[in-house]
Image (tube, rainbow, N blue to C red; front, top):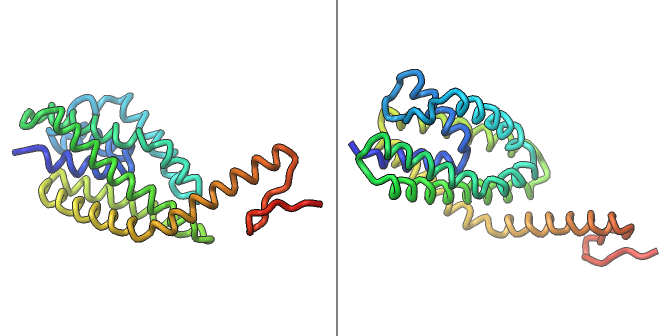
Length: 212
């Protein structure tokens, strides 16, 4: 059986929470739930490291604006993790090329990361903080649920992941205006901090600088 459906699903999940993917796959392999997980992902030092990073992400991902900074830092990490996991899964299976599996996992992770980061930017334009917590929790549950489902029904899980990815890209497209608002607000905050450091005053809502 081809490992590509599992590679696609793990790539989609890596774009949302790469540490959860490595942690779950490692646990699945270490507990004997599946023999498709390479030993590299089951090593104790790997599991401990990603476990600690997962806890950091679980906190940072639920705090407004901190989540977007975290996403920015992980723009490279998540696609790289998706490619790495995909190549390892292909090497364990031997049914497809490591290179192509890595490309599939990495590109899928990049696409889902774009959806996640864009959605969070849009959410951060809202003044209330609860939507960040709800969205982050839903993402964690979704990653765990679909990745677990992929262990038993890889093709069906891949279809679900593909539908979620396509739907997310459509949603981000329609949220472009809110994302631009987030970027303007973040740029304004940087300008305010810069002026404060120079002893100036922050600009008002019209963009002009107050003078005594």
